[in-house]
Amino acid sequence: MAEIKMLDASDRGLSGGYMMWYRFSRNPSAVIGTLILLSVVILAVFAPFLTPFPKHVGAVVDFRARHLPPDWTHWFGTDKVGRDIFSRTVFGLRISLLLVIGVLGISVPVGAILGLIAGYFGGWSEKLISGLTNVMLAMPPLVMALAVSNLLEPNLMNAMIAITLLWWTWHARLIYAVSKSIASEDYIEAARLAGAGPIHILFREILPNCIPVLSVKTTLDAAFVILFGATLSFLGFGVKPPIPDLGSMVADGRQFMPDYWWEVLCPGAAVLYTTLGFNLLGDGLRDMFDVES
Amino acid sequence: MQQHPFVAILTRLGTFVLVMIALSIMIFILARIVPGDPARMALGPAATQDQVDALRGQMGLDQPLVLQYLDYAGKALRGDLGMSLVSQRPVTTDLSQTVPATLELVLVSVVFMFAVAIPLGVLIAHYRDRAVDHLGRLLSLTGVTIPSFLFAITLQLLAARYLSGWPIIGRLDHDLNWTGGPTGFLLLDGLLTGRPDVSLNALQHLILPAFALSMAGIGQITRITRSAMIENQRKDHVLTLKSFGVPERVIIFRYLLKLSSIAPLTIMGLEFASLIGNAFVIEMIFAWGGFASYGLNAILQKDLNAVTAVVLVAGLFFIVANLIVDVLITMIDPRLRRKEAR
Image (cartoon, rainbow over all chains, first blue to last red; front, side, top):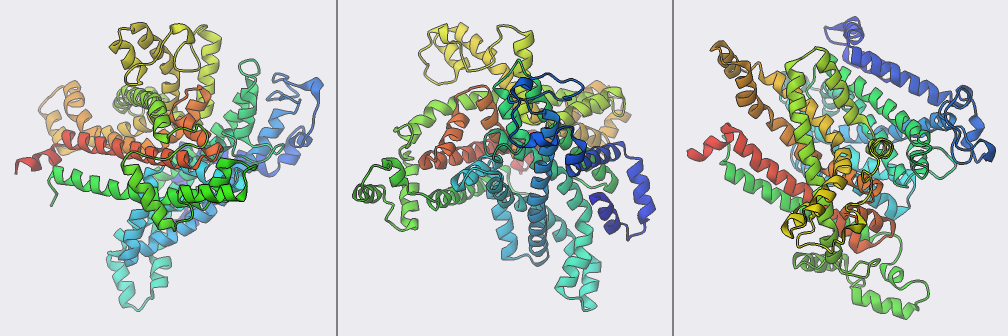
């Protein structure tokens, strides 16, 4: 759905919606990425109806079925207490997608607005943004997120807060650069002379021009957020058991390597599948909009 | 108007110092406003309130935050980062024992990155839009998207299955009677002390974790190198060389490669922070026992002095890496170098 909204926003120019659709359909990486993401979203949303053992999300124990290798009943095998790994993996996708929505839903608007303001008005806000992003750059994000979430309390909510605190600076920096270059264009000056206020100029004149860059960046970032969240929960900073999330499933399965490899590789492959989808779509959008990364 | 490269690098150095100061303030405040009293944590629940208050006074925790920070910064500049609550030793001692292990791992994986990614990027740029290109692009995309823990565990799994006897955890076999060398870098120490068997063994241990750590960078650098090579092929001077009949091989290796290595180097510098972050995962999986393992442990144990130090050292790694990148780019890019002659 996200990409359709984006196309609407950018097709008000000469190219038209049909042109965008044409470019999209001729771009294999955008199409494959969209199909992958569509399958992920459908699986996650309708998980209770699409998985063979939705009850296995909870604290189900069936020791007779523990550590079963993948077969037709259990596509991804079963774990140490006999739960179906395929069902748990599909439900785990929900946590990954929630993380993306939560982190980017806050950091993208906040970063974009601050970046717009800094780019258009300049002055101290400009200095503040570039100073902050310089510090954030030097900080291994994983270390920072670990430190923040652990000093509070190690769980996914705090990890999410930690990631969000870090992430908005990247969007601020990007939008700052774009809006700064747009702010000196003639049509902005024309709008100002015609009596347009700063709110109109920021959101009606400059922001629409940032949409291509912002959509590419946001799509690629979604992949990073998923990787990041999975890594955090792999290290033990995830949701509380028995709720399945992909990183902690991999960490659980690692105790039984190398004999029960499916307990690690299957949830891990689900992370890879999702991040691959976002990256393919992001690369495709970049080609379609012809923006530099 | 561009600055003299030397001045430019000095300016960067100044920015880096400011970044370090900002970073230290940030982590210092973060570590001080946490719920929980460091003095109480150090003494345990059995201590009386008087004992805790006494230690608070001793640790300077009753002072205003600004004074506490200045005190910390002053001591840090003299090489005193406080005591670790967990190991009960100075944090600097812990660091000096763990940093070389991580540095060795990181350096070898940076070597891997460039040794694999630059030739691969050049190759697939040369065969643009052919089968080799599609395959190489898919591989590099997988490198960027694969979770590092998944790749690392898969490597371990494959090694355990198909390379019996190949070491999959630790830095060295236990039966080597190794008592430690002067630098802490095992590859180097083995050679310095006349124990090539140690160096060889350490190298064997290094290959899997270094490869796992370098995967994300290999993917990223391959992609950047490819697009830089393709873009630079259209530059005027390259077209001129072509029209003079200079062989393609010479153009690629003598002119294009140099020009196209600037972008990957810059990205490498920026990506260094996430490389250190990934080291936390890789060291855990391979039981590496380096600085990142120490940091993870410190975070889990809420060992505040150690956490602060780990964040600062990670920042320092990033800054030094970027300074090196700046110097290298100045050396490579003739447009920056020639300013010196003026």
